[in-house]
Length: 77
Image (cartoon, rainbow, N blue to C red; front, side, top):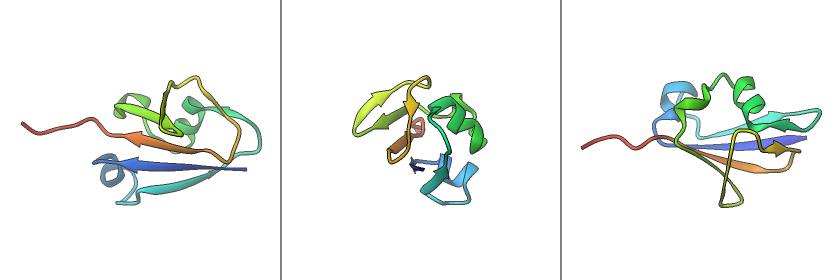
């Protein structure tokens, strides 16, 4: 089973060498927090997580086939 992660904002450059799309193979349902651990992304680095356009929390269970959007915090001034 695959979970697709779409990374928006500066996180893709800082953590993923500019890649904005990652596919994570999972053999069983995992929480978003477990997925973040698999990709070595500290959960506090993202501002929000969306599944099908709806906000989710780090305890949401993902079963495969989902696309999760990871939003970076906004910066600037």
